[in-house]
Amino acid sequence: MGSDFMKRNSDPSAVRPADVVKFGTILAATLFSILGAHASEKSTVPTTRQQAVHALNRLAFGPASGDVDRVVNVGWRAWVEQQLDPKSIDDSSLERRLRKFPSLEMSMAQTYRSYRPPRALVPETSREQRKLELEKQRLRRGLQRELDESVFLRAAESRRQFNEVIVNFWRNHLNIDCNKSPYWANHYEVNVLRKHAFGMWEDLLMASAKHPAMLVYLDNYHSKKGNINENYARELMELHTLGVDNCYTQQDVGELTRVLTGWTCFWRYDDDGTEHWRFIFRANHHDSDPATVLGLRLDGNGGLTDGEMAVRYLAHHEGTARFLARKLCRHLVSDDPPEALVDHVAAVFRATRGDLTKVYRAIILSPEFMDPVFYGSKHKTPFEFVISAVRATGACVENPRRTLQALEVMGQPVFKCGVPTGYSDQAEAWLDPGALVHRWNFAMRFANDKEDGVAIPATFHERMAGSPPVEMRRQTIDAILPGGPGTDLAKSLSKTGDPRRMIALALGSPAFQQQ
Image (cartoon, rainbow, N blue to C red; front, side):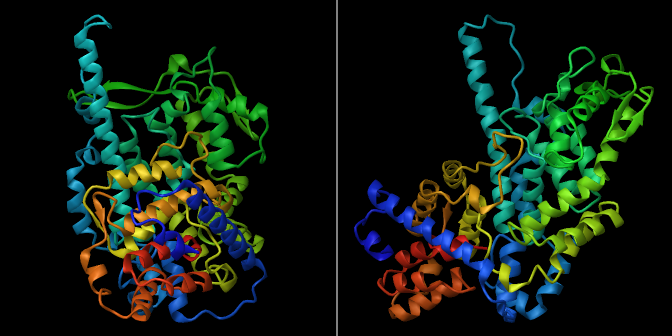
């Protein structure tokens, strides 16, 4: 069906709606069938190459050229140990490319001064005010582009692939929306998520709790005695630590809200005159009455310390250990992880006081991680799909702006999730025929060099040009689907001799959507 679809569209940017909806419906049905089949498949011992492909699909954004052979040569466990120590991996080439994004190295005060024009004392209806507003929008868009493009580049090109996978996990777990915190998201990405992703969970949670991006996003910055806002306290329990309706009550939410009053952010000057935009505690806004949060009694005299004690208490709570263990196992192993694995990882979490590197290792080196029943059982999110397509084809990323727009159409723009939950990593959130059509459209544009700024190198096509169709198919499958193409795709590829169509079919296939 796929090759017939391509023949009717010589211009890949002019797709007939009836055709793409039909293809998307078939694709969705096929995916549901494939993903549902894994639970009943008989386990077999995977080959060394299958293990390498599985590790690269789960712990990286898919294999790039040569990755599978490299992992096979060193052994997937040895490769994992390298990835669990990201600072030991030379990523200097990428770091040089990232220098074109100055906001990544700026303090919050520098970002604010550089990307927000000063307020003008002119009437709001004046021409000068309108010009100032246009300039403000231009600078904010530039700041957002730096964040979007840096996230894209890191995911596509970093040699520290597991670092990028796990930062993406925390980006959703401790989600902020840059539409609400436009000037702080770049700093939050670098100084909260990236700084603490391989450290202690308590430090990551505290850094998030005190960062202006989170304080503004969940409204704690204006929560004070007599005028409280429960948003952050509720999400701190429900999304960041314990999970929905797990161990806590509405009374606990109210008590924690009072304990966190006065946690805000503002301009501050150090004694040497250095200017900062940072977290501050306003004692005159703090509710100092005694409080009890999940059994933790606070006498109210501790001020800032009481809030810090409450955050640490939640970080190490038994409910948090199980909630994070399950969520990490779901992300790395299966949408429905085995209870025995969750129990084991929660125990490691408690025993190590939330040492995240040891928690990751416990999951990845568990027997369940490489159990063949979970091989290819997860479904890629739009971000994972696009990045894995770029990596599989060795695409050159000069300016991913149009591709980032494609991610927005697919429903996953960077740092713009409209709800505090962050983007889901479960199949059911993305297996919709209408949404899958956008993936197919992207695959066609990308394979036909229609994605301005992100291009498959000419050598990728040239090495197939002039080869017999059978050899073209082999090369396409080896490059894009080293884990195997699936029966349906193999049949589709056999019906065309056009290498670009083969690439589009492979990228848009159900097999490529799996990880």
